[in-house]
Structures are given as structure tokens and as C-alpha cells.
Image 1 (cartoon, helix red, strand yellow):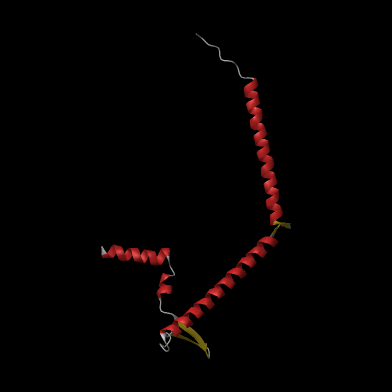
Image 2 (cartoon, rainbow, N blue to C red; image 1 turned 90 degrees about the vertical axis):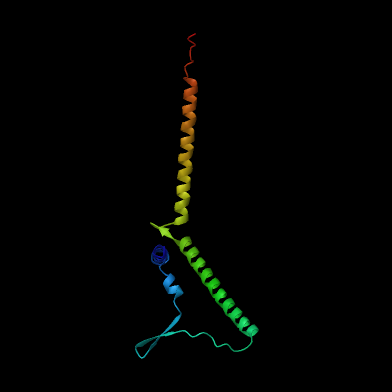
Length: 134
């Protein structure tokens, strides 16, 4: 049983989430000094001050990171909006192309509806009454 469990874990790590190993790894700092690459483990903060002061400092750091993420998301949203607004295909704006497609779809749907109505009218007009054989 242990072998199947470990194979499932390996499958999860390698196929489903290939970055899990990197996430679980202890954080490291990378520095380049004088053309030499130095990799060292990040040391945790020293436990100085009261618990409340450390919690407040951590809260401020989390708040700062949260604001940075929000600013990044807003910037990303604005870039995507600008890109899609100004996107051109063969010199025409994308919104005009989509509008033209919608108009064409509506036209074709109207034609289909008209043809269906014509079929029903012809069936009703040329329907042969069924004679009773009894």
C-alpha cells in the first residue's frame, strides 16, 4: 500500500502540480557579487519586541503586499482593456467586426424563420385530406 501512496504523491507532484516542489522548498536569496552567484537560505526574522508589535508589523507587510497585488491586477486589467479596445484585424476594429457578425447572424436567422413559415404554409395549403376507408 505504501508504494501506491508514494506513486500517487509523485504523480501529483510531477504531473498535476509540477511547481509544488519549488513552493515547498525553503526560501533562498540569490545574489550576484563580482560575477559570482551566491545562493543562501533566507533567515527568518529575529524574535524581538512584543507579540503585538510583531503582529502589527506583519499586518502592515501583508497589507502592503495586498495593495501591490491589487495595483498589479488593476494595471493588468487596464492593459487588457486597452488592447481589446484598440485591437484591429485587417484594419478594422474588433468591435466593428463583431457587430457585423451579429448583423449577419440576425439576417440568416430571419431567413431561416421565413423559410420555416413558408414550409408550414405549403404543408397546410397542399395537405391532402385523408379518406376514411371504412
